[in-house]
Length: 565
Image (tube, rainbow, N blue to C red):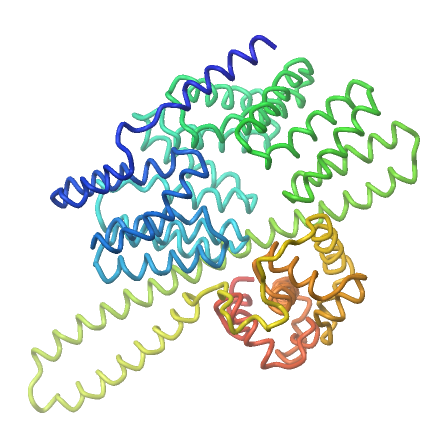
């Protein structure tokens, strides 16, 4: 315990180091400085927003968004919109990043445009919209390539590799991670180097190469401890100790696994990284099970289960249900063991389905993006050829040239329509019109326990009973089934999903449609039949909802899905 105390003292000291400039003093300097110097100071201000404690960073973000437009600094405002994304809900993230993209485009700043695309890709990725994430990441990559070699592409390449990892395409992911590591080999103390090293460690776990994974995680920890840490760095500590506990357990190094668990739990609580706790308690429960301590194993697995309801993760659920089934088997409780075996099977199926869909969507996005780029290049070449022909032809050929120009313009419109269909917003932001008077959020107090129960019951109805397939389902009907009132249920949905009931149900229906289309189960049905199958009352409402949540029409999606499959 003395070691743990010394570590905490060291971290408290290390994390206290902040920039010698205050945000207010930097704002004053930015106003007075020439453009190049102002740009350097802007980057320092954004860095403070990343390295400060979360609450301080959020306050700084809110202040910059409020005051920067008044000092007529367009680039700082764009950067603040981009880098404030982590403090906001999904809808607000997309709204802010779209605004940043529009301002950067008006300014003709390709670098800031690439940054906006990159962070849009991150937002889409975190919302499980892998096709939109891939398209935006590829746009960011292309812009950086056009800017030249002095602009590093490590961040966007890492993001593309992450998308391949989530889809189970480990060879492609590792190849890209290794490429980024080679390009950043000179800076082995950077956060990117640590993250890339960790990601390759995750791939080694998937390959059952646990000793190599352990070496990679230990190396990351050594690099992290060798540098002056800030609050942004602190998030890496609980994660690293959790992963080291996992690989130690895989290798039957029980004492090491126990030590890593203790440190991981301490740092998770210390730095409010509570999302790491479910995985840590699963490791501890598995450790107790391996040592024949069934009651202790059950205690920690149940702690993990409670936390997983707040931070659901398919990977955690597979390991958790496996551990609970084994533990109840050890306790000779066959009924409970069988119950968790069924839950394990369902979780594994969900995990496999998500991975398959991510892989399919990655392929779909890359295929369509490359196709449209080729179309645009083809059109550009046609335009050049057209200029040459027109400049050399005689008056007698002008009529032919006129018809040729009409044909080119028609092709251009066709290409632009296709691009708009893919590039349209994938997730529609909720406006005031989306909420009825009864479904509007309010600032009154809400019973948290009741909220959690309403959401848990609602998710069970939606995932197990697929209540959304009932075309007559309404907020009131759902509330009656759940044994609550519509006001509490509406508040719960608004609080947890930042959405209203109709949008929540329609998104589930659209996801059901995508799953059924890509699985080939609905090949015999037309759009009307698909709409009815997925709970929509008619073709119009289905098409509108599908366009809202995917950015493309159902017919376009079905056609392109057939081309790929």
